[in-house]
Amino acid sequence: MRLTLVQGDITEQQVDAVVNAANSSLMGGGGVDGAIHRRGGPAILEECRKLRASRYGRGLPTGQAAATTAGRLPARWVIHTVGPVHSAEQDRAALLASCYRESLKVADSLGAASVAFPAVSAGIYGWPLDDAARIAVCAVTAAHTDVEDVRFVLFGPDAYAAFEQAAAGAGPTDDEIMAVLAAQAGDHWRAAFETGDVGVLHELGAAVDLDWPLWRRITTVDVAEAHVSDAVRLAASIAGDARSGGPAADPDALRAVLDRLRRWYENEW
Ligand code: AR6
Image (cartoon, rainbow, N blue to C red; front, side, top):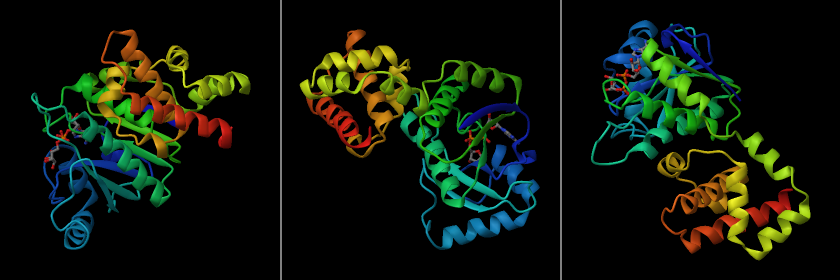
């Protein structure tokens, strides 16, 4: 997947799908939502009404996504997602990350190869730009998707700068993580995964450069079902916590990560 940053207006993007920072009602609003409905025309609202009359009678829940036509926009589809309102008391980063992951899942189900995202929640919903940018870039980088071209379309120079900085510090892609695994001879991993030695997590942690606290905030991964690269991210995050004197690793989480890595070695290598 290629990730690009553009400063501009999302309604003008020539992509298969544009993502709308909507609200649960799906009935329109200000910001990007207002711009998309204005330029796309009434066909979008009409399909939003149908979504409300069928699958989303109580509204689209925060962190989820659903598609409609893009009406008169250059794109084919609008993928509506509902970002969380920023809260100083509660960390809602996992919900914000979920908006990006779920939007990409919808894009996959449509067969969209190119998707444009705005900075979800970073406007009316009050999310501080730098944090919103880091969560967005990390969630997209770690997503497992067939979308080839992900474009962040930022409205002004401040948003563009925040995303540029976030992209510079983005975690490794799946391909980069698989290269780390492949760089070691098979016997090395077999020995390490079989002993269940925490040392192997440190080794993975040193090889995979990730923002550990951020990954911990946004991940909702069930390790047993996860792509092996996510098991490595979790391994690296556990090792990162240990290095920085953070909380001791939960033994069940450790075992789950090692089990997943062993299964990869035995069946998927
Ligand atoms: N193209 C790209 N980015 C834009 C555009 C545009 N045309 N217009 C605004 N932005 P916001 P939220 C930027 O407020 O915070 C609506 O009323 C904007 O500068 O659109 O998720 C909905 O109905 C900011 O950086 O979305 C909800 O009620 C980013 O897009 C609520 O606002 C997101 O700002 C959602 O709030």
